[in-house]
Image (cartoon, rainbow, N blue to C red; front, side):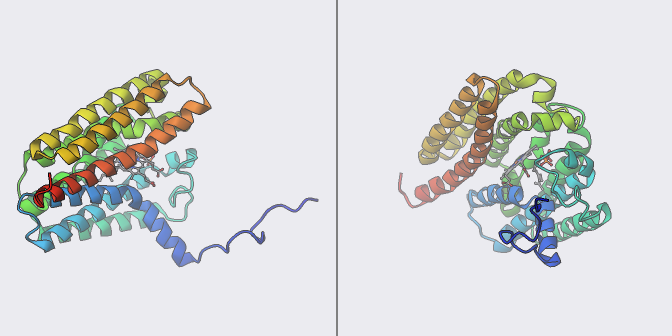
Length: 313
Ligand code: HEM
Ligand SMILES: CC(C)=CCC/C(C)=C/CC/C(C)=C/COP(=O)(O)OP(=O)(O)O
């Protein structure tokens, strides 16, 4: 009888200790990698404030508050969806889907994250920052997850508003008020989100169909989805240029122009590919690029501001 490959294989690492596994699970539950980009966009919101960061406790507390509240949103999302997550190849190893953590344990974790976030924001920032952060958590963890995601293919357009708030939250944490520049950055993430997510929805469409989630490629087909991706990619390109005019920042403007043209080019290529494995692979590439693209835009805003403040350009 052939010997099956089991944990005794000399090529497999020993399984991680329970403590390490728990830390990994808590990391995954809080969607820490997504949250890291949210926090980065918030940090850029803070650093763009005209006064500069004058009150460091507020700036640090703003970022910590967003990280913890964003994490709580991720946990709430997974408390609602273990059965859905079990149906999808991408998510079936998650801690609740595999039963390593129960709903009650996850709820306690979410409450701790959110409780500490509220305390930190109340103590060191201002009520506006707290209100916007809570809007983000409730918008994603409750409104998007419970109501929009299972009911409409446009879930992502409205759900994206929650994830778009961090630059504004960063700005209000250090300034205490709202301004056109951070609002444009919210608009930028808002229009970027569908072009970020729908490529993934294309290559995961069979799983979404199996799990009965009405994502756009499932309800309206691939062609309509590719058309919408192109529309949102062009919109992202255009909106990304507005901060260049607001801040007279032509270094950022140049980078946004080139990166946006590349993103639109990818959307065009995705649209032209015949349905099949090559298209799925390209959709995967576009999803990955969307993340680098947003990171690049926000980095360029910082570089542009630094160059302007040193009188270069
Ligand atoms: C409601 C709006 C959004 C939806 C539906 C969405 C959807 C997704 C999905 C399904 C993934 C794959 C996650 C995984 O495989 O675990 C993902 C990954 C990611 N998203 Fe989004 N996203 C949204 C908004 C955002 C926003 C606003 C940001 C940041 C500003 C963001 C940043 C990321 C990053 C960095 C990843 C990669 C995570 C990793 O490598 O594990 N997303 N997104
Ligand atoms: C400002 C603030 C506190 C905001 C929190 C908002 C937040 C965490 C947004 C992230 C959005 C996100 C990870 C969506 C994943 O979609 P999905 O849940 O449909 O993906 P899944 O299938 O991977 O679970």
